[in-house]
Image (cartoon, rainbow, N blue to C red; front, side, top):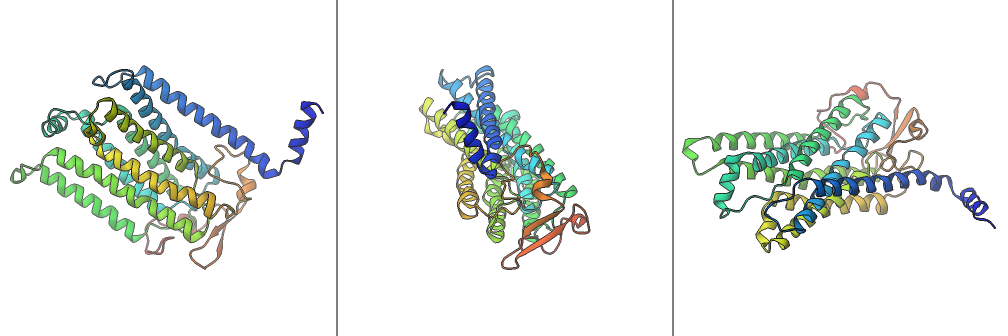
Amino acid sequence: MSARPRQALQLETMTAEEAAMLPQRAQAALAITLIALVGTCLGVFLPATASMPQPWGTLSAILGWTYFATWSWSFWPQILVNYQRKSVVGLSFDFVLLNLLGFLSYGAYCLALYLNEDVRREYRVRHFGQDNGVRLNDLIFALHASGATLIVVIQCFIYERGGQLLSRTCLAMAGGILAVCGALWAAARSPALHHFQDLDLIYVVGYIKVGITLAKYLPQALMNFRRKSTDGFAIVPVLCDITGSVLALGQQVLDAVAMDDPAILFGNSVKLAISLVSIAYDVILITQHYIMYPDARPFGGGDPGLPILAADSESHYGDSRRVSGDGDQGAKWIKGHSGDQERRPLVGSRGVHGH
């Protein structure tokens, strides 16, 4: 049998679900290739850290810009899934709000340690002349992440949300974070607290991001557990996130080894902590998606997290959307793309999580 008839026979015996996976795998391969290409080109052609010997400086830059490309790309599948579905059902609003506060905090941390000479000088004084470990790729990522998360926030206001509200617990956390930042900013400018410098404020802001990273994944993991489904939550960002976390951790380890100075590993302790925490939570979400709830995807059995551009979103969602309920309340049906539920305020006494 020739190669062409054999290939045709394989296509005929392929299931519809397997056939649908082919363009998704091709898109995934294309995305991986583009991410690696962008990271390598930026690492090679942008200036490397002057204090690092070559070729370690260039290799560190390649790792840094590849993690930047991976983490940056991880935001867009969820944005595109929301756009295709015209719905944010299945996406935790608590997760989104904590994500926004976290990346705004991380952006302020990176901006100060990379661009503010007063903060950089305070750091060198405390660390025997050694500069901090924040790189240009860290700063650009933080700014991009803040902007991409703002897009998701806007989508939560304009798309169908199935009656989901922000929980009071999350709102209390957000209010507490803002109050702490305001109080510490005032303390840094108080003559009575002259020992509390701007660098101390920036440290606290950075570790707010670490704390938010510890908390922000929990609502989504709990939502998946209660719904017994990961439908509506794109898995591609999680896969990108764990890859970027490993690369970011690898960059810091490489810097410490190349400079023969373990202290460099903690020169950007916020980035180190974020990488470790993200890896741990990503493992949980990946386990839920592929092992615990692999068949609990009601919209035609597809995975809304994998296709970058679905050929026919109506064939998956139609005019009615089935959404798993909380606990043992079973499934609920949400009709159409409009209605009273779609325009309910985001803040209320009870959200999906029942807080």
